[in-house]
Image (cartoon, rainbow, N blue to C red; front, side, top):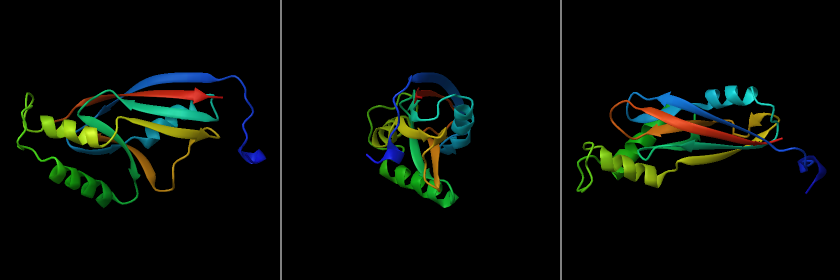
Length: 149
């Protein structure tokens, strides 16, 4: 490991917070700024942020945030992949119920993002999104766990 990549072992700190994101229905909701704002309040400069979605019908993505057509195309692709009114047995909460679970299964509910110099190590065009799979609005709980020094 080169000297500029070495981190001296010190005291490991942790911080946890739950944030609530309110959706207006299906779509991608960027919350990168919310994460960055919370991180700026922490005293941790180098570490790892875990972002965890506490739901089975919404998921998390790191995706391009410069061109909104990317989010549109992602939503359209997943609608074709897991259409509403498909031949599903599970439909307790409506036609979008099982497709929402399938879309979550195909994506992820947890992200791990490195933190260097107190900032997320994201690419130039990357943003962090909640991917809401249900048609009607929801309140989604996202747990943040930061560990580092």
